[in-house]
Image (cartoon, rainbow, N blue to C red; front, side, top):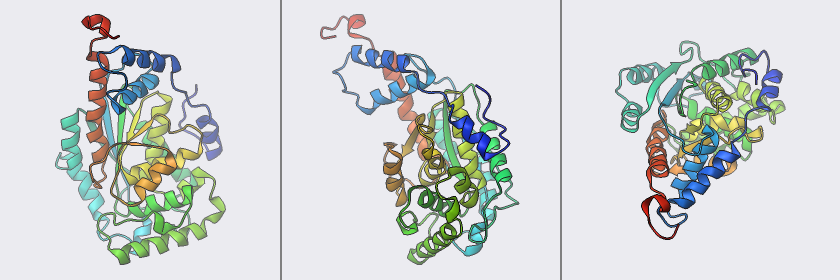
Amino acid sequence: MPDLFPAASFDVLRGRISALPQPDAAAAQAARDRQGSLTKPPGSLGRLEDLAIFMAEWLGTERPRIARAQAVIFAGNHGICAQGVNPYPQEVTAQMVANFEHGGACINQMCRANGADLSVVPLDLDRPTQDFTQGPAMTEAETLDAIARGAAAVDKTAQVLVLGEMGIGNSTIAAALARATFGGHASDWVGPGTGSDADGMSLKARVIEAGIARHSSVLGDPLKVLAALGGREQAAICGAVLAARQARIPVILDGFICSASAAVLHSFAGALDHCLVGHASTEPGHRRLLAAMGKEPVLEMRMRLGEGSGAALSLGILRAALECHNGMATFAEAGVSGG
């Protein structure tokens, strides 16, 4: 199939998304059969068995292995910060990017512990998006550019992609995207983010509803919603998800912000089937979002840091699932009765 990117317009990209590759049913069945032959009671490894089969159907082999795990953090700044929705200044985005690059953040330790190669992609941090209460956050061209930059960051030789984000103000962006995609009221989706109190969350909800009212004409069109309300890192996450799908690379999404970014693609049937959600964030909107997306998190650890930390932690569980799947003996190999 032709490369997804670059795409000259949203219309072109929509057409390409409709032709994304599907899971390998034969590989999935072979992996399922293998699980049934291993020296354990059927189903006794629970979700670990499901994860092994999931990896098999996307990597196209009965016995999938992770030789290379790639982790990418996308970082962006947001015009909506002019509305006072964030307790920290936007300079913190660039400061945290430097911290990632120097190995001092939580995500660096999670990647080292769980065997992922980390890269950080700052997206025009000196040029925030526009305030979505005043107009679209991005033009179509800017959105397509960020999507393409996200896609370009994906290493096609990896067997799994871990995604995270950084951007002061982007918990408001995530709540706005979730509200636009799945409905309800903004108050259903907002949370404390980096530390907003009750008044701060109320302000977030009012700002989001003002944005929804301004951009009501694009609701129902996911790419136009992304341009109207999203940010560059949200668009880049969508691009990385799509590029990974084209290369048949499974994806692990992080918490609320990362999940809400990818959820823009939920309206395209099956577009997120190759994605796991690494953990359930304590950010209030995340459980509601997971239910809307039909996703079960791999872990529940009461985390809400972002930056890909929960996704990278869950990579260790995924690796354990594959070690069991590939390394355990079958009943026949072990000479154990019952197989």
